[in-house]
Amino acid sequence: MSSATTHTESSKPKLLVLIGPTAVGKTRLSLELAKACNAEIISGDSIQVYKGMDIGTAKIKPEEREGIPHHLIDICDPTHSFSVAEFQERCAVLIPEIESRGKLPFIVGGTGLYVESVAYGYDFAEVGSDDAYREEQRLYALAHGAEALHERLRAVDSEAADRLHPNDQRRVIRALEVHHLTGSTVSQQLEGQKKTSPFELCIVGLTMDRAKLYERINERVDAMMDEGLVDEVKRLLADGVPANAVSMHGLGYKEIVLYLEGHLTLEEAVELLKRDTRRFAKRQLSWFRHMSDIHWIDTDENFHKNLQAIYGIIAGKFKIDIEYTFNQPFDDGGNAQ
Image (tube, rainbow, N blue to C red; front, side, top):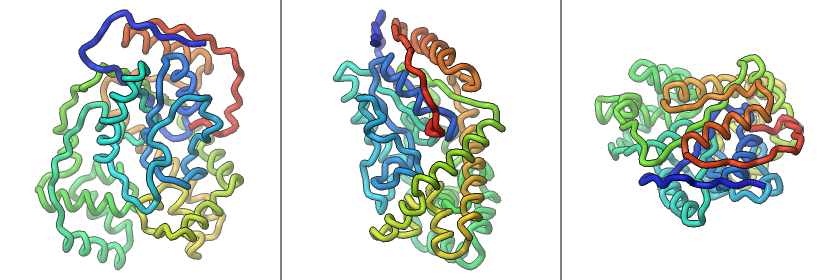
């Protein structure tokens, strides 16, 4: 049984956020927090929005959600190019709807820009496009490789290069295009965004010993392979999803595509996926470290102890009473997100 009793009213709506690198344990904690705080979960993941991309995204199954509403999961086809602007638009509708039901809006995810853009109400000015420039960069990557294009970005915006994987060609080209059109970098534009929130904001960040996190990542990749990741990617391609679609640049998909196209052995693809995922986790942590107002929790501690610590953070921030008894043992099974 859970309850959350409000003591004071704020002029700003409340927003709870749980962030952390992949495989740190966000999913498991989010379910308990949602029950304790009478919350509805909004996925802050840029790939879980796509239908049929389940295994590679470690998407929580409907039967595992324990009756808690989850939003922005399975909302568009993998051929669609979902963007941070669309995520903002969806959240602008969702958050008031959740509030109107007397529930707490709760964003859970690891896509730093998505989460931060909503938490702080970022305004992404339209800077236009240059189709000829985009095609020039695409042809350059085709001739010289993704790494060479990525080095072009590093030369003008090293921070963006650190955040973006070389295979994320669409975003690499867009970052180059922004600099080409405006003379300023994407990183400079992000730095210039306001850091005040339209919400009464409580952000909890999960962290873990790096070696242990990498071990969990490796175990997760092995579990995905056992669950049928190769067959999932085969089905997506057979259903007409292009190998160069934005969705297929997600971790687990681009590596398996390379295997299916004959560029790598299966063993090489699995090792590449593990390496790429470890590097992605490192980039996630780097992104989160530059955010302010995060209450960090080390998940190496006892799970129940972590819950109690987070309850205290939320209760103090939102001035609410949280009464919840955690008495069900968990088996991570490598599924914690």
